[in-house]
Amino acid sequence: MSTRLYTVAQARELDRRAIDALQISGFELMQRAGNAAWRVLCARWPRCGKIAVLCGAGNNGGDGYVLACLAREAGLPVSVMALADPATPDARRARDAWRETGGGELSTGQGLPAADVYVDAIFGTGLARPVAGLEAEAARYLNAAGRPVLALDVPSGICADTGRVLGIAVRAEATVTFIGRKRGLYTAAAPEYCGTLILDRLGLPEEALAEVPYDARLLDRRRMSSWLPPRARTAHKGDFGHVLAIGGDAGMGGAIRLCAEAALRVGAGLVSCATRQENVPAINAARPEVMAHATTVVAELAPLFDRASVIALGPGLGQSDWSRKLWRASLDSGKAVVADADALNLLSAEAVVLPLDSVITPHPGEASRLLGCDTTRIAGDRFAAARELAVRHRCVAVLKGAGTLIAHANGDVAVCPWGNPGMASGGMGDVLAGVIAGAMAQGLNAWRAARFGVALHALAGDAAARDGEAGTLASDLLAHLRRLRNGLVDD
Image (cartoon, rainbow, N blue to C red; front, side, top):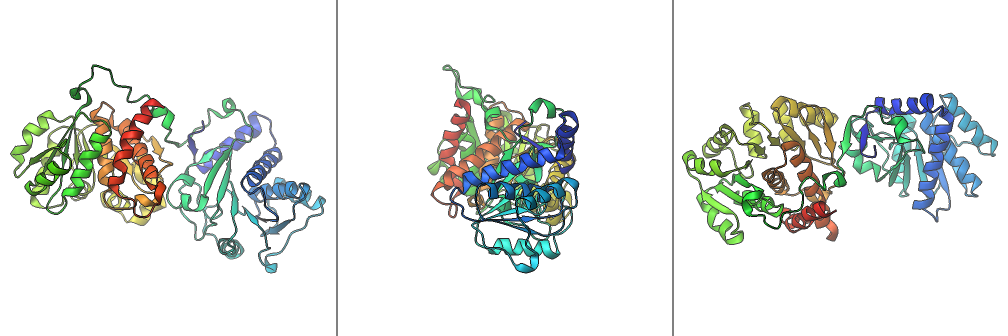
């Protein structure tokens, strides 16, 4: 259950199941949540001198009052700012317990209290409207304070379903979320605001909650470790498939070279490349293991299609007449494709049925063209967009970005928790297309290969960024791909 991701409605069902089936009161859950948050605060900021807790009207605010009581019991100076009177019985009970310790609440008119650590207990998972008024002012103060913030369950202002910012949101250094992972915290803008994410199950047994439906799953490196088993000592290159990489129009030969080498680095037995004549000498000199073929007319592709296990289509392809002919011939070949870049732009202009077991890898701009909408809609609900892409094109859809989503046409979605902003540079998508195609060549179906490829690509990006994110090149991932691909097998 640790990789399950829940919508807000499903998270509420988790709470209800705990209360009804396990006979745990709502106030007991609130006390457990406050205790869990207090443990995180003590572990992360052990030398904290003064704490300030900002409490909203709901049960999230009640969690904040519980934490404030624990801080006071530990002898720490603690201030509570109440942005509204408690609106639920459990939150009122928690506020009353705080007052019984001798505590009181500051009004918003008194300004943000000085503190070493702030606790955001303003809004929980249920927020669906733009943050405004006192809450928006408090968020602005917290973001400008220059002190670390611990968010309880969800950073206030983040939609727990989609990860988008509802007007303004609190930027936390750490977020402790309770019982189950909320799907929106792992994609869109949310990773920028959550900081380090910690899940606390509040001591609830898995078996009691296992039947509650969930919406998506985080990628799990352990689950993927057996998908490509260790190679037999008698193995030969023909056992590991043949990737045909097609692209590299004039001036874009580097893209198809990156794609082809990535397929080799993840273990494809053979990789051929169909590209413009002028790219062939450079590819032969830089990476002679790639079999580069000058391709002028479509007829020259026929023997390459015959040998290919899978086609990586689109890196540097362009949208010229040459590009369109190669694109159409590739889709007509019947071979599974991993479509990226201009292959997607051509697909958005001329809707065709993709071969079975294919993968598309759009970024938000490409996704908006494929779905005939603007990027605001894509950002507004990435889960819905990824699912629609998969259904509309009858394929596996990889919606790239912070918290990349992998969607199956049956509705299943996986979310990647790895990757970093250093990967926002040219060529990264070309490498990803090659990684996925390389995994498919070795026998993984599109659904597994897309998840395996996204995970491997993101982990390689994190490894490459250890010397700093800015300036990370797509080619920096290649050496790490080999090491991590073998690590996924050995782990």
